[in-house]
Image (cartoon, rainbow, N blue to C red; front, side, top):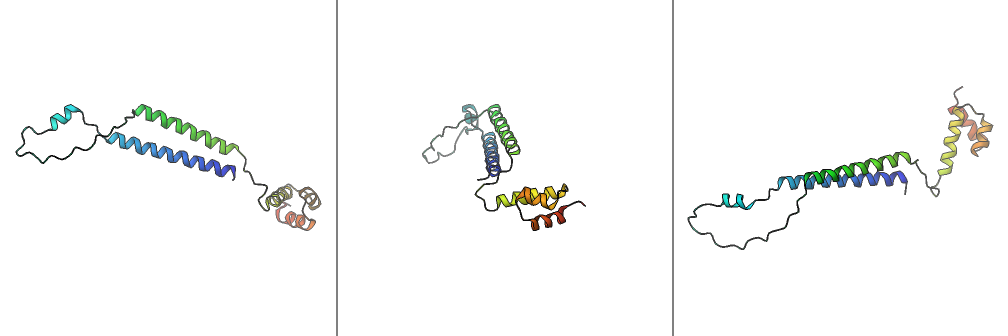
Length: 145
């Protein structure tokens, strides 16, 4: 697999992680945990008729994440994302040796560059390992005259 593609996949995963953390943070910010005092204040003072007793739903333990902890996690993710982006930028684009035509593409790119720099068709053919006819064609197409 191409190294640049792997880098982009890692960046995409880091972004998805970041979005997930933001969604969790928003959900935790909107969930208000009632305190016993607030529950007592909200209870009606007198009830006209007792309601039928329904089983109380099980109380679920909620984990609380402090905003500064979440901000620290987001900073670490952002730093990691920046490191991955730098790594992708630094790594040269890699072509797989088993890829058909990889060497031919390199030879033609080198031949085009040599033609732009003013090399003769004979020099281009010898340097790049292409036929003289191909070298002459590339020289005509890409030379600056």
